[in-house]
Amino acid sequence: MSIFYSGISALLLFWQSVWEALVGAPESLGTHWSWVLGIVFLVVTVRVALLPLYVRQYRSQRAMQRLQPEIRALRDKHQGDTVALGTAVSAVYRRERVSPYASFVPLIVQIPVFLALFHVLRHLRPTITDPATQTLYGWTAAQFHDASHALLLGAPLASSFSGGGAAMVVAGVLIAAMVATTFLTTRLSMAGSPPADDPMQRLVRRLMTYGVPVSLLISGVILPIGVILYWTTQNLFALGQQAWLARRHPPIEAEPLPAV
Image (cartoon, rainbow, N blue to C red):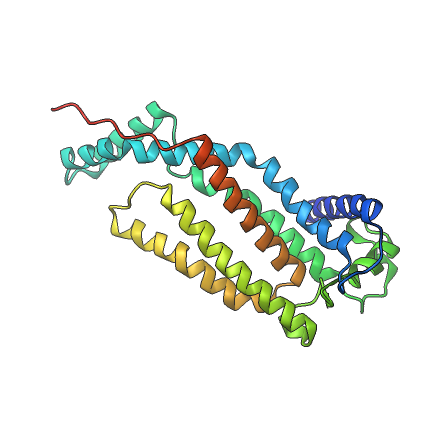
């Protein structure tokens, strides 16, 4: 995983240096803006890099929605024969060049990014004084010192809800925003998916829609504030991206199936 840690560190340090050159290093409103904007534009970089995957995911969802009448007809035709049904449905997917698993690809790709940022920010502790440890993943000692003391509204970016004081307040507000935006992005994503006829699919969707936000409400207390800021920012970006995709690629009405 060290390659991911170094890569995320390089992106964060790049954007921090860009914003420090643009806005300078002084603190205002208890916030070191170059570090905060560095995390925000880390999100922008990742989302833009993954945009082709999101476009493909969205098109696949629309195609799956359009194919639902045909899939239901196949289920009626092959009742009790799961092998024949699976073969027929797979043939439809190949013909239309869609995959029911396309929606999971961007999420899977983002997991290493999230874990790497979590590790890097957890590593930025002011109590670390060993130069060899400070300079892991391409950091200099000066960069480590600045980042480990960077603040958002008076709360250290590397601290968590359990840090108390300003950290508890800022983390609490961000956790609430993270949970709310996660719920909204999941609901919006599910709205573009075809209806779930299978009970297991409906259960999975409920878990995704309600289970993930609830789990974040619980696990958010241990996440660094910088990671919560990253997650919330990427959710807001996702909401805007979904609206843009919906306008650019409106849903295709399903064509009636010919009589058999």
